[in-house]
Length: 378
Image 1: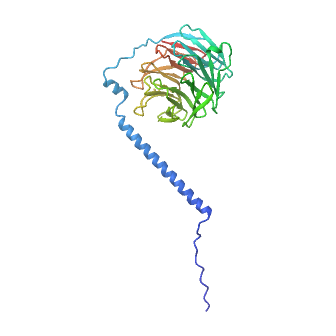
Image 2: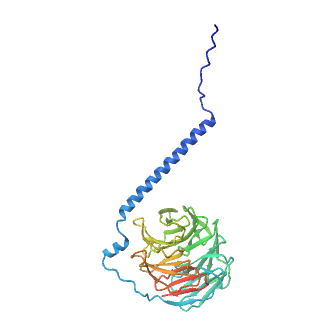
Image 3: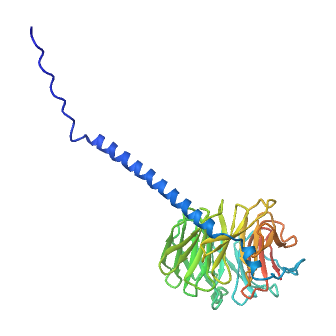
């Protein structure tokens, strides 16, 4: 009888092969990502829970607790006072000067026009190199500069004192990789721009140099506004459905406000600089307070189904004006029930209301439209 030789001992394959190590590592990374996602969701739920506990009253209830509110006059005395005719293409943007009677408008007829809104006279017409303009701005300290930009991806700054002699821009600020959606002067030397490349840039106008780039949004930045009380603070609204508050000095985002369900097209600061108003394609405007880091009012109605293109506050902050895609312009009571508008401007335009703004003095509202007209309401 012959015995079979003993089987060789099973030796574990150690160290493991590179492929096996990579699989183990990949599995642990995937598991770690899932665990991190679960933790993020848990923290979000906790934040929402705390916010819900803090939001124990509506702004309407808080306002009523301070005593009876003054009723907004009905029918309102706000009437059409002036119509500015002169553009031959869609008006895309407008911005008041600091003197409260001049304003600049930008149209896709390839012209920037500076108007005296009181007399309706055209003070200046600036021909643009690109007619695809989307934004314009008036410098607020001395009123000598205007800026514009659009699908040319750059911000062109014009000196109104020199523009009569030469139609060339004083400075062309080039660095954005997408269209220019909004621009606002901080002072005579610096300007902020927002773009479809998801960033904002702070520029030195004299040198044409980009001083700081603000990254943080994950979609096109559609609008920006500078705080009326602190020039070092500005807010932005984006296609990523968030509104962000930024510090000019640090270059960082200091607050992110969520709540909208679609693109934010316009942002405006409350007159005291402590809150912001937003207008979105989800057919609502919202009021976010920076002190409690939360949404304190929402303005919309089941019958309003179109997007909002532009928002601005009255000087007291009691009214939030909003321009809509369906040619209408509504005024909302910021201290009231967000489901009922205070009043509606009577037949403002024959096409989309693309821009609006209340002048610094607070005694006039200007609306601009794709019907080529600008209208002054007071």
